[in-house]
Amino acid sequence: MSASEIGYFIATGIGSIPLLDAGAGVKLVASHFSDIPFWPQLPRRSFLENMYVQYSQNLPGVCLAGERMFVDTSQAPYQLEAFYQEYLSEDTEPFAIPEEYAEGLYAFLEHAPNLRQIKAVKGHITGPFSFSLKVTDQNKKSIIYDDTLRDAATKTLARKARWQEKLLSSICPTTIIFLDEPYLSAFGSAYVSLEREQVKAMLAEVLGELKGLTAVHCCGNTDWSLLLELPIDILSLDAYDYAHTLSLYIELLRAFLERGGKIAWGIVPTDKEKIAKESVSSLADRLEAVLADFERQGIPKKTLEQASLITPACGVGSLPEDVASLVFATTAELSAKLRQKL
Image 1 (cartoon, rainbow, N blue to C red):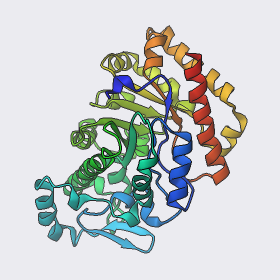
Image 2 (image 1 turned 180 degrees about the horizontal axis):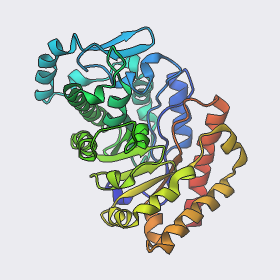
Image 3 (image 1 turned 180 degrees about the vertical axis):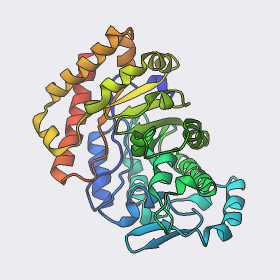
């Protein structure tokens, strides 16, 4: 199945959930997202499932000290040769994510025989920009400013993404791997001095490892032109708060849609107070207003509908369990309402 066959407001989720039990988490996901299920990240279960720690194995010099992760730059140089040898071997197994770092992934694989008539299966990995910016050395300096460590981090994530895609393809031939890039909201600010082409190259390197469908998710405002110019199939954003910012890039968006790109509208808020004020009907109206705005700017509504997926604005791992369940239920119900209307 190609990206062009996934749309018309099909629902999926972003990744993290607040449950502690992996099996219960998989059932929660499967009960709401039957078309595009995903494996649940369980950050409350263990520090190892923090979205940066979860994919840190193989990175030269990486150290865990209690609930702190850092790169020891005195040790990294001695591990680089072995790292690049593994990378150049093209074998993804050395880059496997251990079960203790991703119990939800392995529980999802066990549950796979119960999944029926799914359209695609979704995986996710922290994007190289956010990972390299968030992870620091022993002196708390971001590794993004170390050319060697930034390259090693990008290649680590690229191989882990490929390994994950291969694993998920055993469940469904149509896979979607999301790169989660929350810190792209800082790109272009005084906080980040990396050049635009450097950031694009990092993202493109990870995306280039993948054979299935690809997506980038950013839950804040960013320079959307950077992402729209990348070879991705799906652009995922917090549409509840930031959909209007996408209209600043209308010509790039038009070109993205014309080549078959999709928009995952994160129209269901993942803020406790905001979701309490909304309903399926109010969110349908909110998204309708967004699509109408783009139609006024020359993108046909039919084109937008064909290209639209529905998701929560972000992961729900930090929410109380009842609120997380409400977000998932609302997302699924909104998807059903919009698809029935069509």
